[in-house]
Image 1 (cartoon, one colour):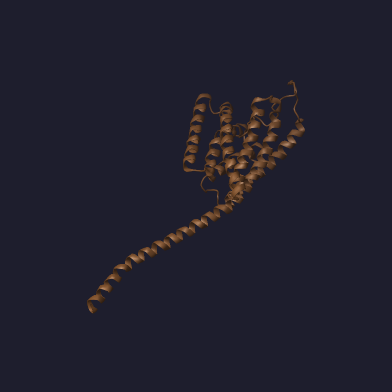
Image 2 (cartoon, rainbow, N blue to C red):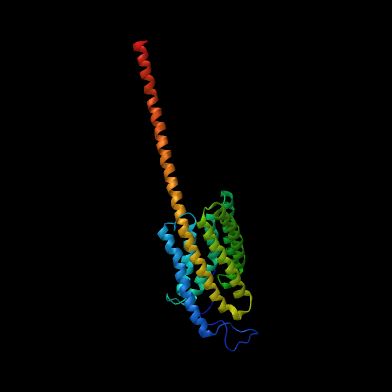
Length: 283
């Protein structure tokens, strides 16, 4: 989820009157904004780097996660001024990120599916949500109004599904001491979307005076969830490596067993002929 602002200045003016006042002054906020933004950007680089180093970038559902982080990271770089970009570019980049947020995470969560049937249902849910987004875009246009509409059900859907996977994989990790990487990764998703639901409520529903303070909370959530995800990917790398080695060993044993069976089939007729020959000579 991306918090989209039409410009980089405060969303409120000094001449505006509210019943409540911003928690931070403008100077303090801008300093914290850039500091937290920089740390958040670095934190988002960690999962991307580990995905490539571990070789998981193109493994099963991980490409969806990679695309998600690359999209959000590129938006951060433009938002914070590390990449020169116009206000229009930043605006529409944020809109794209918000439309792709739920579908990408749903496709990534396929990795945690317990059964093939559950995986199929999750795929259907992702495509249905894409169709829903297409309808909203057709009705309201490609803008923040449309993303505000699709974000709410998307956040709730992702939160519920990640909670189900969290309870399942944490139970396996604790009771059976297996799949710790999956438990850590899905914990990162759950934590992020619990926080994003809170930030969405503050940014789009509650008093507008708190919109800029919500950015700082958003950065903090992104920092913690990205670091947790990076740790989970690193741990999962070892499990995938073991599974790959086991699969390779099974294929080799299968190949050897198949070769032995074929050789026995080829030698069996010859042995029969020799025995018959002996009978004719000595019978």
